[in-house]
Length: 501
Image 1 (cartoon, rainbow, N blue to C red):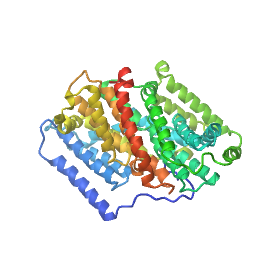
Image 2 (cartoon, one colour):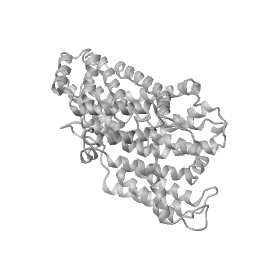
Image 3 (cartoon, helix red, strand yellow):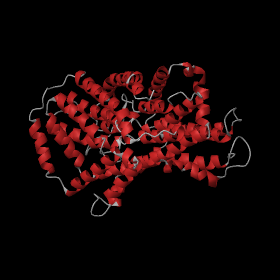
Image 4 (cartoon, helix red, strand yellow):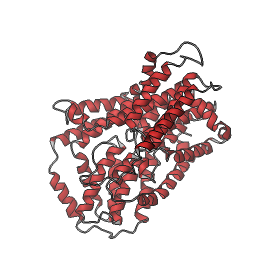
């Protein structure tokens, strides 16, 4: 989301690269792309596949170095796909060229993908609920119920983050929602920003926002994208309810573990906030009674969640339900805002990046580039001879390590999920539970808990100038270890029992 996390907060973003350094990375990315595209043909790789790999290398260099903004990288991906795919043979390594006109639908294929539809609709839904203030009322009421003991406040913040996953289908938007609430509570409680309590409140927002993304198909943008790839590659559908069954327990248990880590690894200045209940009560009183917009958005989301849950019976998929929800939000007399109001609150750069990233991912799979890349990079490691659970464990650890190279969960998903699918297909073993392994691999892109620069949601909390990187690292290291160990445990137990592995 583009909104500021809190009024008046300073914005300590990472040091900006000098223009010369950015220009150098751009040149390096372009040279690497062109070198791959025009290099001699490689065995087993089509000409279109070589083009796609070249564009992927350029994209990864841009994403990792942030030499250009994400929206600019998205436009570059689309443009390069149109041009270079157009001048590549339509099939194989020689023969008639595809043509730029025919390459355009391929370059824009991500924008007709069901995963992209859900992401775009989700950002509009997030804008709708944030325009009403209902999320503040929910957060304050939960904090009123759990009480004002320090541990209870942290539990309340995590619970709010989890519950908002049902209402705000955007990790970044949830972080942008809870960051000002956390800052407001710190100020209202009369606590120093740099106190242990103050620092850990924002670290809690930064990390719990990522954990909440695993819970639902609609609570994190990588989820519908991965589901769309799974459906196309393995002809297996994961419904909203299926995702809740598969990912929900992992997310909730990890959230519980995180609660114990953040509350037990810190010695707070007090065990209960003096006058905390009165402060929360006053904040609720200042909100006043529920407005008509809050009531309308509550009804719209009740219908939306009901349709998500009943998808197996209504046959209305989650993407269509989300579109219906956006329509209701915009409908005169029923909705909570007009197009201009809601569209102005939507991060169009994220929508553009997801579409371009999905297009690139689809081309990696369609041209066989992902298959070739996986065979070349992983084929000699002997993973195919391992038992499935052990193979999954090795893949998961590798993905978590690689994830630290990306500053965006969007770019990580676009690059890593198709590569995992390509690797699994390269094993040519139909007995492998490939869709389940892809599902588990997708969860690994969320495990980026140590550095604020690895996720926009953490950067929103970090921009308040409340905590330092070392504060997040101290909590993030044990949380990352716990997430990996829990992933291994679930692989050998729960997901095995559920038929994923």
